Length: 100
Image 1 (cartoon, rainbow, N blue to C red):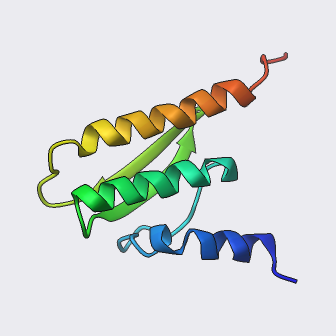
Image 2: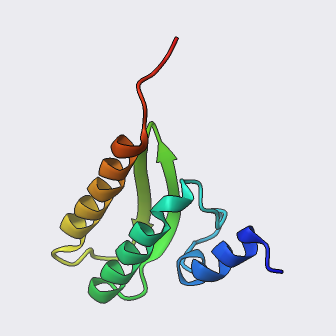
Image 3: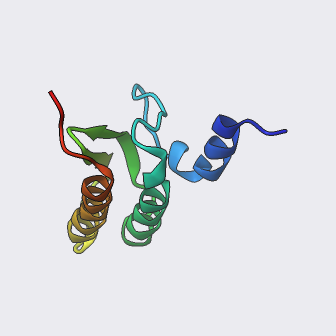
């Protein structure tokens, strides 16, 4: 039987391979965002082949996606902003009111 972490690593292998040293190749966000990250990776790779990742994480309920590429082609930033907003919509739909 395959462990859940191993299955996730296999699913996300292309994304994990884009991390640049010294940044650790880790997925520090809710697993339910994996499909958004895969879509984001696919779209950026179309516009900026060879782009590299520094970090992907959740911070204050928002997706943070830090990447580098020499000269960012037109359209990449808009695509990143749109897909990050999809994670934020997902996060707000899943969250419940804070309790003291």
